[in-house]
Amino acid sequence: MDKFLALNMFVETVRCGGYSAAARKLGIATSSVTRQVAALEAELGTVLLNRSTRHNSPTDAGQAYFYRAVAILEALDSADNAVSDRGEEVQGRLRISVPVEFGRRVIAPHIGRFLDSYPQLDVSLSLSDEIVDLLKERIDLSVRLGSSVASDDIICRPVGRFERWIVASPEYLLQHGLPQTPDDLLAHACLRFDYGNAQQDWQLRCGDEQIAVAVRGRLQSNNADILREGALEGQGLALLADWLVKDDVRQGRLTRVLESFEVSPGNVDTSINVMFLPNQRGSSRIRVFTEFLQEILDNR
Image (cartoon, rainbow, N blue to C red; front, side, top):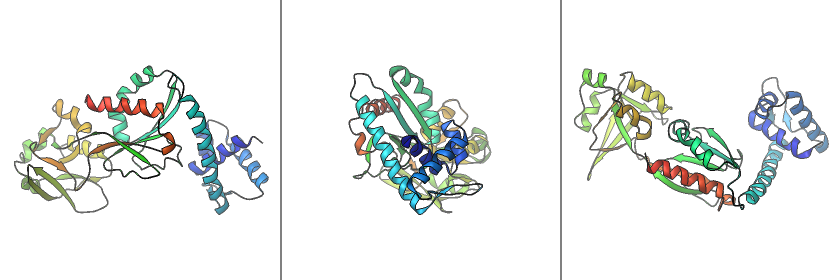
């Protein structure tokens, strides 16, 4: 049995929740995954996975073994990357996690230029709005929007900021009128991001004046692009990141309102951060991507 191969297949089975899903991710036959995991269990003399027709979850022993296996694989990756990071060429594999729409709209249009600049670098770009476990998911660098707290376990570096705009379609504003003051928002349908609470205050600031408006509306979603589509279809006012709607405003599909105010959905930070593990400190792969992202944000 190839122990390294078996560890990889076991870890991916736990991550994917089953043999078939792990096999699809690895690009191999399901039988190969089941055979390697079974051989690993036989060598250890213990059951690592609870089997069912739909899902394979780790046993208590399997869960403990999973975390140890992830640490071993991560240590090996770190060793490989530490060597490749020390050469004149930036090379190796860089695994990045970014929020879905931010990745599609801000990073994706420029990723080809980044790859052309570093021909020896392989990039795995994962789009997720979830806060990923960098160690468990074997992610080198995560891009997060909003406040992120650094700790002894995570290094956080700010690379830029964004604004939030209140926008609506010209058709909606023609029918319902243009808000002139924050209080006018009370008379409008407001498309709200779902933070898990029914009531939501939009905070508006102009100079020293700050106003909280308890906005209401029929549409609420945990996906910003759904709210953007709702605004485009004339369903109301939406409070969205500038990078998401800037092209729509520039091309006249959406209109920005109350432009003299800084706006946010409550006490929410507007920083853009990169996060990575301490053992990646000094990595040339992380350095060049961070510089690339800062350049994109500076030239928006």
